Image (cartoon, rainbow, N blue to C red; front, side, top):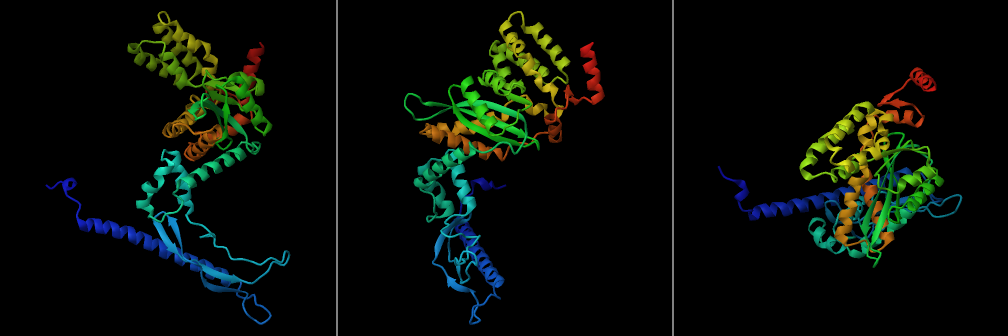
Length: 428
């Protein structure tokens, strides 16, 4: 049997590949031309009954514009857009009406999809100088928008987008949960070459996660986080029911000051890593197994019993490991007071952690973003891009109950009668 992987690529195969590329570009050119003609014809037809004093149409075709090269997904193709002579005037302003193509706007040189992919490639690690050699074979030598200056201009636009993002009103949605975290990225600023990004993600009533804030802070301090929380509150953010984050953050003191009624949930991924660091490597697999049993326990009582099992095995010789669990036990088990469908989301800050991996990758590639504004803009753009892939909350229909103050015990909603009985027991 012949192994096709060892066969040489023939000249005919290369010719076929070249022909396919040419066919794709020619097909794109013809389809664009046909679509532009149809668009212009439709515009003229809509106003065919509008005539001037001599009975001539006010809207007619007027040849074609100069050829321009447009970069689309299949390459760069020459296009001559049809022109329309529109002699109508606006009755109120007296301004001359103009035909403007929705398919190929004036001065457009790239399709929206190509425009979108350029910043994504840059954010994923492609340097500005590598765009043209990397994409010329795919999009053609005449592809527009591949110069370093184009990408630099996009970066400036991101800074403006981030500034508008940071000022937008947050009162249009209710947020049940917040995920908070910080990350240090490199910037080329001399001695102060580290920037701490403070990020907040909210969970709306419909269960969708939404990026709320990307700001710079000083070493994740309480003062920096207090400024972030106060700013969001001033812009209309409601008091969240639960905030999820790493126990080492300075956010918690700030949260108690700005949103004192919000619950606190510590991230189990961070806590597990902290506990394992206190144990010898030979014991870590067993400890990790027991920690998994704790976090996956079906009730708070079961989790407590699993904690005692962990204490029996490791408490005597490794008290520091147990101290890390005992210290934050209330905050580690806060998720039991919320719907069981939400638990897998609430036990970790993974939405931020996984998105930050992309930010760190990009800043390593660029050896720093160059300025705080550029680093913030880059992180913002990366996180906004990642937001499209964030999973919707399981049991999203229960978020409205959480926001309305419903009581949950071990993940199950407590009825009014059960709540009354519990209140009577507490009073007794």
